[in-house]
Amino acid sequence: MYIEESHKVLDTIGETFHGTLGAIDSFVLAITAHFVTWPFVTVPNFSIRAGKLREFSKAVVVTSYYFVDEDQRLEWDNYSKANDFWVEDGIEKQENNLVLQETILNKNYSTAEGGGYDYDTPNLTENVSFMVSNLLVGSL
Amino acid sequence: MIYCMKVYTVIAMRRKNTHTNTPTIYIFLSFFYSNGFAQPRWQQTPVVPVGSPYNWDGFQYKALANAWDIFRHHETLAVIGYGRNIPTSEDPDLNVEENNQYIALYVGNETSHHTEPFADIFYPIMRNIHDETIHDETTLDSNSSLTNDVVGILSVTFRWSDLLSKYAISEFPEGLMIVVENSCNQTFTYTWSHHRAVYLGSGDLHESAFNHLKQAFSLSDVRESDWHTGEPPSTKGCQYVIDTYPSYIMLEKYHSSKTR
Image 1 (cartoon, rainbow over the protein chains, first blue to last red):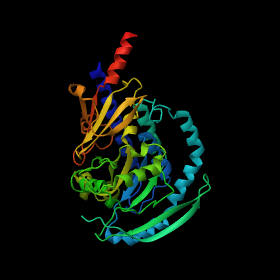
Image 2: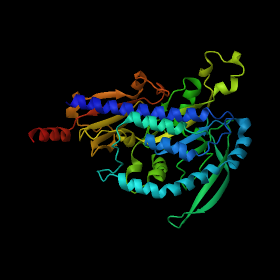
Image 3: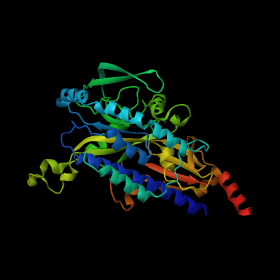
Image 4: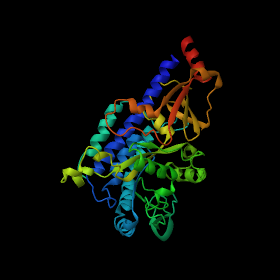
């Protein structure tokens, strides 16, 4: 009985991890397929696209780091200042979504010990398909 | 390797917080590097209204620097970092309190959730080699995709309790003990309660009476599964094993359900 249940738990954790890595891979592939001017790349609507990845993987934060070589540093400095629109853009979208988020939180937040979300969505395959299709729809 | 960054410009921009009616400060940092290169943080979501949104040098974060070394010199697989708020021999300079404050920016600090173990999945961003060499097929040999032409890293920061609970099925047994341990000398324990993994604390906190019933699963075993997409986890860096044990609570619930 216990052995069977623990196998079920561990299998589920493995599937979760597997699905999360697959979603990250889809996200990264979508980016690399569209850009070649590294590191001078700013993904439009990053907050929306990475936000979907974050939601799917129940992550806290998604961050990109780019490699900048010595001979690129001044250019990068100028580039990053000229292209930091994503900061305001992200904040604006977060604020616009606040009402929606609060509604979702109120609906799903569990009063169980320790708090937390209601994770009653065990269909991993469906969620991965949804995630991948959302990430790849539309051009960057 | 010396990961050196010095701030030389600080531009503060005030923005009215529309919800609390108090001003919030965003600080934009630029950097220079004495070691010739850097890995500046660029885009992020969500954007928190405090601190530097970008250009903080990722090489200052040892787990990310380690992942970079693995990607560049060994293999381009997913790397799971060590727990960022648990002391580890891997990073003697790890500042637990600072990292708890960092995660609190995202999850709040009203509860103890920000002190629960959190870590990163690092994923390499590879230059799309076909875009650059497809017009010159002589340079596109069979090893072209393995040239480790890493241009960046995507970091997905997660709390272990969220990962463990993500697709948890409500039939998971109440009281099940879940011990997470890694090769970076970190161990922490959860118990299954009310349909989710609840953090108990640092260390292996399972009840020793159930030692013989340990079941284990290594995250690197995912390599053996039917991999439909994505890179499997690297065998370098921190390796994670998840153990389960029954508990007296679980035993009690099992007996009470049988006598019903």
